[in-house]
Length: 368
Image (cartoon, rainbow, N blue to C red; front, side):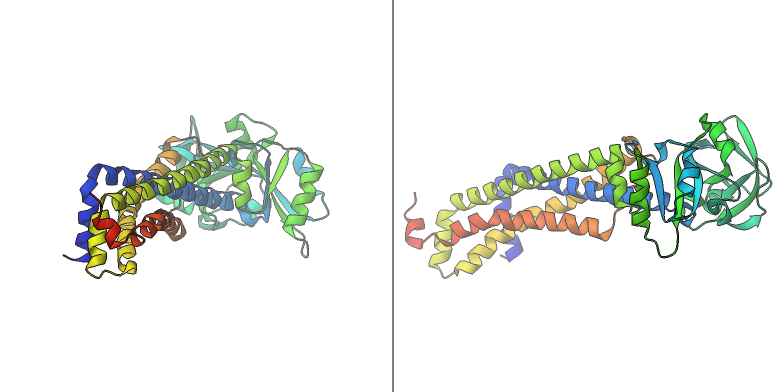
């Protein structure tokens, strides 16, 4: 019999016990994968939103449920612009709502002439005038609209003057209108979502951001994408809960593997003794126990990766996360899942393997 065949045969002796152990480890792997994919997705979303118009950082309302639901008084703009470390600032209103046949379309309100408006490169048509709309190149493809067409936002329609490219994924997937128009659509006059800030040469964004936070209580300056998880309350709740459940899954999975392999060793004492008697070295017996534990975790890894992917997609599409957040399944996410599964397997096999190699042939053969 081959080594793999021996491992499979031993695991199938107690199918229900093996299946329960696989399920426990798979849940832990799934939680880790879903958590890390969601965290990576939130950071990716934040990285796009805090650098709209190639700004160095963005100012948002502290404690907002997500970045797009931030509300700041428009009067704050002039005070931020007057800071000695600020080279330029831009007022931005982000509206997420129904546009054409899309339920969660991004509509950006930019003040004409500010850097967020100036830095969009027109690739088709012309710059907007009055209340005309500009459409991102990716949005133009999805909506199949060109300059001269009409963009329907709720019950209103706006002529598309041109198509632009900004280099920012979310801006290119959306459309822009003059700031007062978007404020009117959102029924929030004199309010904005965020203020984009660029700093003076020789000044670090972090230093300016910290000063603005001290000067304007209730405002958070997001310089790095990782900060978004700390101020986005819905994302923070999911991430914190995910780490707690993942830790519990790690403990439960480790105990499950240890218990399964320890019971397996206890039930096979005579068999192990015979192996020792016919010349099996201790390292080979230990390798057999470790191989069985790793085989359990390999099956759990496959199920856990599938379950983690499904959980992350479900949470982003039907959960309380920002409508813009998407799970980002990077190589690092799957590597952590792999490390979790096989780490649990190795840790869970330590005691059973030690117990197996300490069994003497005389002790084993003397068992009933």
